[in-house]
Length: 373
Ligand SMILES: Nc1ncnc2c1ncn2[C@@H]1O[C@H](COP(=O)(O)OP(=O)(O)O)[C@@H](O)[C@H]1O
Ligand SMILES: [Mg+2]
Image 1 (cartoon, helix red, strand yellow):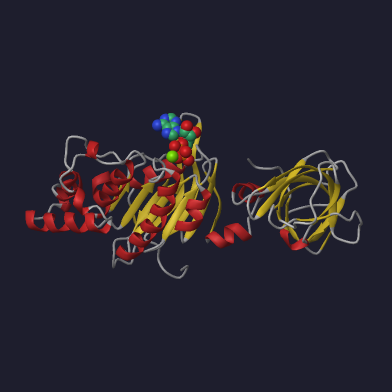
Image 2 (cartoon, protein in one colour):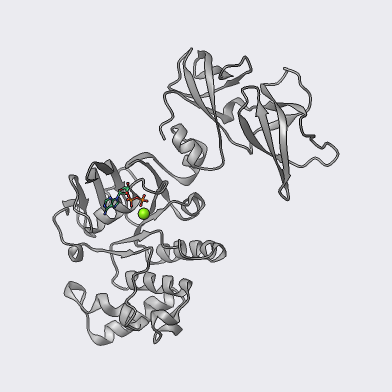
């Protein structure tokens, strides 16, 4: 993708609210037809970034560039009014007009400005957009006569009906119940791919981001911490913030005893309980490292020997979770970690039992420096 021109480029984008840097020097290239997600905790600047792209916020620094279809150049658009940007947004609140029918809500964008079309074309595009979100039978209802899920579909129809170059979606599923959220995810991905629109999606829900996106930008405190495919971000977190934010993770602090060619011996802080890893980033001997250990990749051994690459602890709690057992273990540094263990029926763990925790050196991610959150 890197040899192609993006359709949208954010260059050193910065937005302040008083002293708060809501968006801090963000750089991001977005390519035609991709679904890119801004993912991060509440308050990290996702909505402000999206609203800046839409033109709903005036940026304080940097530039937003846009390329119209078939054009070979990116044009700055920071000074362009909202309605002149070839984009459409779906808001978290849906923002449907309560006094208008579904038809009027959806067709509104086709009655004004450059997007204005004839009545006949309007009619067919509205029906078509509603069909695409499986809501054409709702055309004569008012928003108050719709469920949350139906309102959400209408909000999507209203955005796609204008054939925007870029579709912006800010937490569009957050008002749906858990089951509907999951169903709607795959539907919306299929819809976006079918119409081929470029989409920028905002969510704080990692499973939503992982399942919907072509690429994910992980945001923290107004900055992008990592940009990559869902698999990349899951498998190769670039720092401890991403490692802990994505997937389930135990974050433990260790003392770096020694380093050799990308591998290292780490000891639980304040103990001589040590293990090897070969996933290291910017760590130095005698300093502290933050280590991410995923609950799924740790193994429990009831033999307390040191023949394995292991650390040690005591079983605090064990919860049956269907196919897995969630085991909480207190380490020798008194910190707890969680392990997801495949259930071995004739080998139950007892509370207080001493165990070894076997660590795969390629699955223990060690990062130097201070934990950035
Ligand atoms: N209109 C506003 N006025 C003042 N502060 C704001 C405004 N909008 C957002 N912020 C602040 O900017 C930061 C980023 O907010 P936002 O972009 O909404 O985060 P997110 O969408 O990731 O939850 C937060 O600290 C938030 O409080
Ligand atoms: Mg938000």
